[in-house]
Image (cartoon, rainbow, N blue to C red; front, side, top):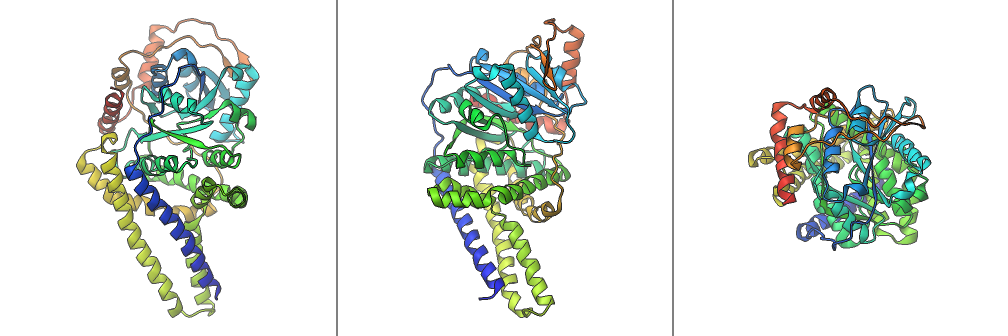
Length: 478
């Protein structure tokens, strides 16, 4: 058996297993109902962790959502790390009553390092002993008002880690934002709901996830610093024998990139992060899956396997073999036809997947039917762009770059929560580990007006999509 034939067979087996598993998840997710966890007492104290870099325009919206949860506000503390900020993110958060940590480190850049710094400060302050669990959000997120209450039910059910339903606030901005939004909705509806049915572990997705004090103490805070720190956390949690649960009734609204350049940079970082995780953890994960017969580890192994990169390598290797005369060009035509057929099947399959996702989750998606049809047709273009992205990730530098967010308007949030932002006095600030107590004075009317003005933004074309998402929050909350 030749080398190329062996590679083709190996990749065929891996590809078949991956596709077969996806099909099983789709079929299971089609029939699966959202899990309704039993009512639970509101007796857990939660710490919300937010890493923000120059997010003064959007972070107030998230804080408003958190402060207006149906879960008792006295049992939710908000801690923000203003990471390498040169705007007034820290001051905005202080005026709204958050615990604020400021970090300035241009060598260790990224969300993972920021969370490490934040949790280290929480532990040094002595506050960590008060919290039963930690919930991680990105600064641009919005929440359903029952989010924490639903996560509390699932936490009481016995999970030490949880992920939630990841929706998008700007689904209908354009084909780029819709492509990313569809992918996350698909993950919630088909993958995580199916994993719950199978009794296997779910995967956290960067935001909207919870971990218990037990996990925090075991890790000594936050120890994950690869480009995809969420995947690294998932890997470590599974290999410690903990199962990540899924709370489909806890809905989070994320903001997706709206330009292809932004999306390209973000997905190159993700792809590079997947390669890092596979490099550092791949062999250990496979050994763990075999030794423990843990299907959660098998699931994760299929997920991190760089099949796209291997496919590109196979094409290049085949061309080199032909160029050096090791094999004939005719012998590679069969492989070429296979890749063409696979490409066509992928386009049709991705369209069908987007359509099925849109139909089943129609009531959660802020877009018109005409827009959904267009975005189902463009979804394969978005997904197939991962081919050059995966190639670029091989040669890209390992670095994290922030993405500018627009957010929803304060007016929409005030309408949703039927109230105004509580710009309470700040408890104190921590700069590079030193606590500096601020005076508990109320901000002037001019300061409040300036804060509200800085939070009002977003183009008119995007407001309609975000208004639809806010309307969906209101409808779901009834």
